[in-house]
Image (cartoon, rainbow, N blue to C red):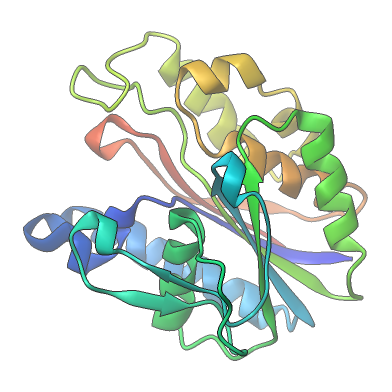
Length: 235
């Protein structure tokens, strides 16, 4: 059963070594992420499942011990997801950022596993993955990585799209209220057009949370670099 969840953005720029001189711009987001991770640790889970967007070839599970690196972002920095024997399969960037957050928090509350979710996966399939995950243990927690639209400004990765602010507003409201049904009605086609990488992982969370009676809190909402970033807790 899902007992707690933290929702965090997943840009590699969240890692100060990657952001370099621009690192202070995301200090508030980093601290909100730290608070969110602390909350799920306090829930005393038996299993932490880290969920994040992934390319088609990266879709699937990642056991504890899976490693990732940020070399493609210009930094010779590697991370490990939880504690376990080294795995051959490399973490997708979103799970590598999650592994960095957990390392920063000195995570030791429970075992950790990863799930990379193909962002083309339809909502009901995402929700089914979430329901399966929630049944893995009596006390499951989730760290859910994902960004909102990437079209909030002219300089955003996806350029300016007038629909982006409304999409992010709906997503932020749903995440802050732990509203699983509102997450499930986020439009998949619109999310893809707006380059909103969080849609599929959020819908995995929605599936896991159905019937759990969790309450939400939005800790952070902003759009630096024209991308919607949210930090929320469900407990």
